[in-house]
Image (cartoon, rainbow, N blue to C red):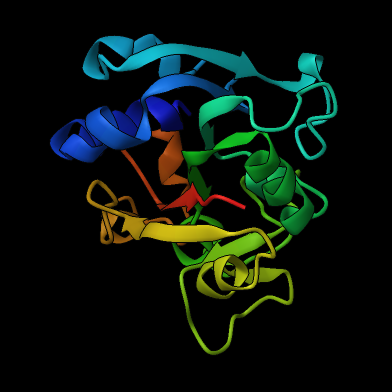
Length: 201
């Protein structure tokens, strides 16, 4: 529920989004009705941001988009729906200009799925994600640190962060419910954000 909008609060506190990451012409993959473009006044160096969703084509392949087109690629809660995560990232990097940034937000498996997969909160999720741990409770888990380290494209990892500032770790006890999807609330973030920079070939 409006995960891009929730992420604005940490983005406006970090000047790098306005001065380095969300600058020039970009695309928001899987934007739906909650594109990062609606917050352009917080990112004055953003010239444009095209929203991309299912009617535009397969987000994994991005077939109608040429190479090296965008200064930034933003995606919030889309990568977990891709059949092949590495292929999706390869294409998202492909359409990015050298020197541009990919900003990607995905659900954290422990805070979102909470030990159950297939996901009871979104049955279209094909993978779960963790920043790094030696063993996950699901065979569908993707370790973000290893994923980025093993990409074939020339990239620089700028940031990997657990977005849990508004996650209420005791909420399940308060509402007397074993499991609860906090993304259905106006503030609940239970995500991982990573930012990578595409390097010159």
